[in-house]
Image 1 (cartoon, one colour):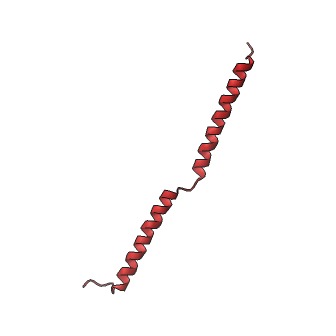
Image 2: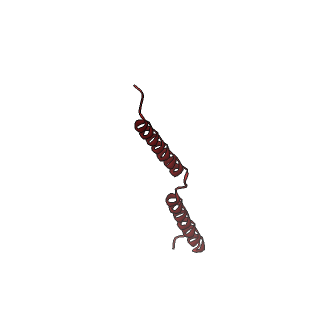
Length: 62
């Protein structure tokens, strides 16, 4: 039995929606994770600041 025009159009629309969703997911996966990068930069900056303060204090316990 051959599909009628409505069934064919609905199937095409469903396939296009599925492809669009896959494209959006792929674009999300390619984006940089800025939150994780920012957290890493913040932790790294704090470590550098602590090292500088330690070095300026003479590096010895009082």
